[in-house]
Length: 292
Ligand SMILES: *[C@@H]1O[C@H](CO)[C@@H](O)[C@H](O)[C@H]1NC(C)=O
Ligand SMILES: *[C@@H]1O[C@H](CO)[C@@H](O)[C@H](O)[C@H]1NC(C)=O
Ligand SMILES: *[C@@H]1O[C@H](CO)[C@@H](O)[C@H](O)[C@H]1NC(C)=O
Image (cartoon, rainbow, N blue to C red):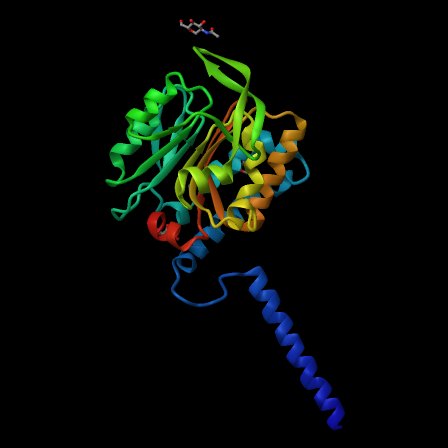
């Protein structure tokens, strides 16, 4: 008798422990505290369910996802739970960057990867940001870019930024055409930690002409940004016209972001390339500064 009630006791104890562990794993917001992330969690979940429902059909179908994902994003960015966001448009001569400006007067750190002879968007954004905000821009072609970026004022870096360091072929803008040139690449972690020396990035604009594919996994939970204590609140990314391997990388990127439940995706622009805007719902400071 004693023996069996002890068995039941331990069975119940280990079951509750398992239940607790599994709940805290699947729902990291299980504390009923007042954190900023908790406060936006149900709104984020509504967005997440909306997009998941719309694009799950394309799981395992990279071609289908590449061609159709924009429809789901356009649908889900208009739900009531997302109406409180004020995503601003910052056009330059051939595209539009997106940014949410902070509600309080806290300065921002903005990074441009790939300047492309055009700082029209940065010039508009800097006018709306609190005093003390900083701009850091990298582009392997220093002609024109260095002058434009320095005038913002911003700090200019004369190389490409990607997932690894070294010499690599890159598509770069020379005068008015894109050409393939061998350029110096600096890895993004070294760039942010040692050169920019900031670990809280308000927005990063990634225009890597293909280098972005190597950066996808940096954004994952437990990825290189997490490993290095780097927070990214917002990012604009141009995904360069993919071949079939790159469509698969893109597919895996999107479904992993959904699994991670950190970023929401908005403002798709679909052409040969795709442009997306992402917002971090899982970091306290980002949520306070941009969502609440
Ligand atoms: C996804 O949303 C688009 C745009 O509203 C709609 O046309 C399409 O039928 C939806 N797909 C699914 C599977 O819900
Ligand atoms: C959350 O969603 C509600 C609608 O359900 C909306 O009124 C509110 O503004 C949203 N909150 C934020 C922080 O976006
Ligand atoms: C770019 O323009 C400059 C000045 O017009 C010219 O000297 C140079 O040869 C051009 N470069 C290329 C690669 O076309």
